Length: 96
Image (tube, rainbow, N blue to C red; front, side):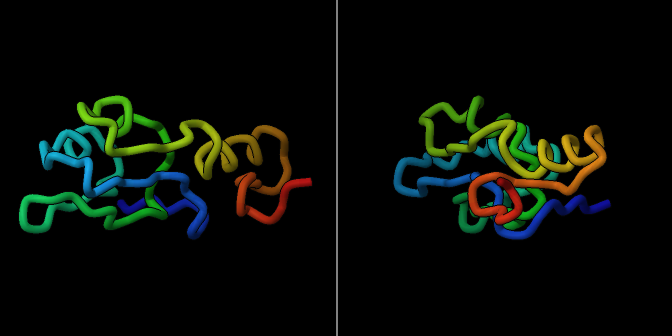
């Protein structure tokens, strides 16, 4: 099952120049956001990123950054809990 959150709002970023290609990001990501091409990672499914932060926390060279807990997964949960609209904050366009 592919989980997709809101389009084009995930804060995940990959610095390919810093990356050493160890593969930890692909291993720890629960939603298969990464794929490896020629031994190097790419963000293949940005909209599947729930911004849990596992990839960034486990990257040995800090080539990944993500604002854990501020993106779509949090927005969807907050929307469900509060009974309102999902709001992704930065770039989401629905926050006041």
